[in-house]
Image (tube, rainbow, N blue to C red; front, side, top):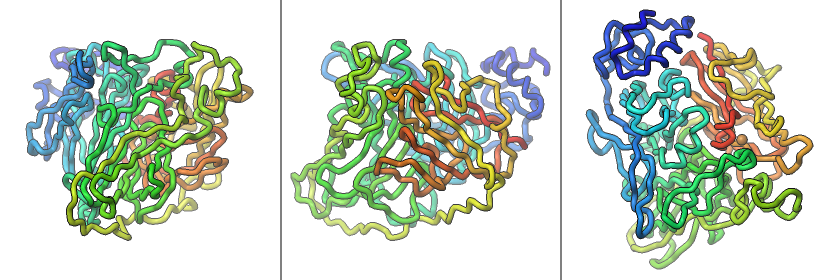
Length: 529
Ligand SMILES: [Cu+2]
């Protein structure tokens, strides 16, 4: 590869050179660098496919420092995504007022999307489209990070089912702090199947991003220290934010709503329930609508996961109030409610939010009926078509891949390994076109009972199906439908089925507790074409 061809572009020369090592992927230099004029693949260092990419949606997305008025007094210093639409219409990007969150990006299945990411933060960063099925170069792998002043061009077709996806940074070692500062946003996909399901839309379709934060007396965000113990558990804030706002109340009419819940927290797990005891009617998960609604008294929502809830207030009088709660649960990890009492080594500096541990009970947000109106929406019996899980049709039915989530020497690992940027082990290579069963085992902290922790496991690039969960001592899992992130509480094992039906290359799988991820509880897997 001729190095000089890369010196004039804004794209990071080192990055392109590093990628040149991936000769087997068929990388070629492109002829020139008029920025944002070539296809993303050629700009980002891969052979031009000679087909011109004509985007239906073309936006610029900048990550930059900003300030937002969260509390009275001093504004809060954050990092924020900001979007500008070039093609596709301004209604495709929806800003949340007074929020540090990035805009909601809306796309329809089958559309071609171009996103010109520009990094104006002081740190290296890259954007990952969480849940979207995109080629390896478009997935936001940490080896594609760009520095301040540099850009990365994304071009992909939206192949996912309609659903609630999201985007956030993915630089190795700094995902936790960057998401915490505010870099995250929703990416909503629509399709015909969803539009014919008869679900509430417009103002009755409500995105709700749940996060926990800690602020100092000057209204500024406080992240954790570099204390190893704090990293082992993950950051836990003491204030619950919804859509970037504290003390959130959702005003509703006497009508039915589609609530799209994302847990955008670094490590806090929520065990959702209605305060007034009504069941949660779940209509969707990570990968879109379920086949049919399911009813749960509780539903876990771990970092990275999404749940869509049907909420009907047509029988409630104006003035009625209720809440979405996080119910208390055990097994939340070091310092969680069940372990607080044991007293062993639980002094200060042990790195957990002592006042507000993972597993504490609290209200996440309130819902208040403020307006009466005629409501004729009925919960659909059938939402979408998903089909059965055919595990005996997989390529490794008799010998599934095993992944053990363990702690070795104060380090969370997957099969005893930690993240290495360019490293793939033999058992992390899959054949393009294959269909595999992967088993994750949360074996816990070994001898150290107190180091048993939940781990939400996320696979990049693919939605998968849950075949089976065992060792379960909790209620509230929604394993139906398509998933990209699954929670494993201590002692649990989960079997998933993944079809590697297209897109060769390097992808990630990791714990979505962002502090675990940052310390290396993440690995590559490689789809071999
Ligand atoms: Cu973890």
